[in-house]
Image (cartoon, rainbow, N blue to C red; front, side, top):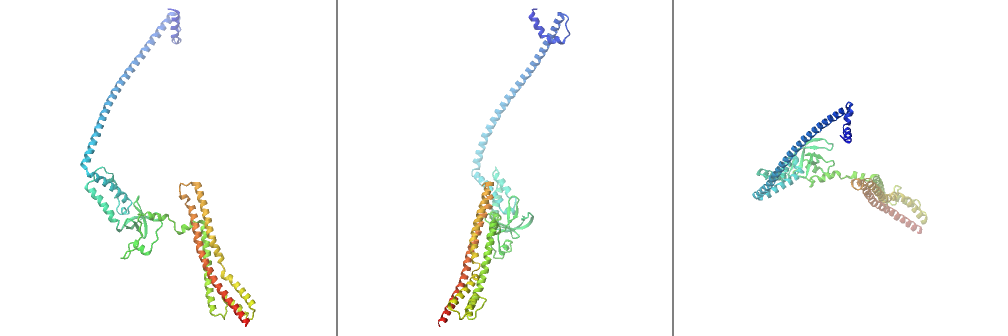
Length: 448
């Protein structure tokens, strides 16, 4: 054995030699090497057997998988052929059905469409509160795929006829009514065709989701005769009733429409100030008109008795000045009479300037309210944008309401100021005429 081969065998068997007992000479070393070779050969043979067994198992599994794949492909082809055959058969059957039905197909389509339309109509109808559970059958008929039979056609015709007849009837029937406080009770409901429903003199709104009636939060104005008609106790000649042709939409909008107090409240503080000033002006005008009417009547009575002047009216006080100074010079008498007239003028013209001022201030306050309302509107736009118009409604309402209030106060005050002024000027003219007569009489007596 050559030296290099010996070194190679020692390198290969070195790990085994480390664990074996130390050899005393070369024969023992050779035996150990041969033993190690036999053990390694056995190990390699065992590994080869395991590998071959695993290879055979994988090969068998591959063959089974290929066989199954072939079977599935064959089945897929069969299913595809069956599907194509069914499609062709379905097309033939549909053509045969269309040929056999003929005009009945159009009738079927008309029936389904009529059932859907009638279901939508009945769902919102007040008659459904009296005759429930009609919509479900109509919806089933509208979605059906088969031809309707005679009984279904007769029932559809009956429902159409029923809705037509009930639209012209006024009937009373028990139903669940929910008050404004949320309390539900069983009440007798009066249904007026398809338009109105009333209970205990109150208009009701029909809730299609629950099938119950809800009392409107705000009721329309009605007279006693209308209320009697609503309750079904009208006279033999009938009565008047305001109907809602939109089947509740207008009555629902009535709740959102503000009344007069709410409209005034939209004007805010500026609106109340305008109304307060208008009330003040009205009080002044009423007081002045009463005073001028009493004064005018006293002056007319004084005109009937010019020789008996009275201190209770302006003309009497002026005549008393002339009577108290019968010997006065015409110039002095004229001055005394003018002085007496000047003393009477403040009483006759009191409050006219204030009413005129209020008539001029009211539109300016309305303009102020408009500016305040627009400021609030722009603030809402800055905070919330323009996506929701309701956020800007308060500011716009204040702007418009204050302007309207200012004009509503100013225009009547202007007319009343003119009325008061004309009344006072008429009395002043009488005093001027009588004073001129007194002066003229004094001049005549002095000339004589």
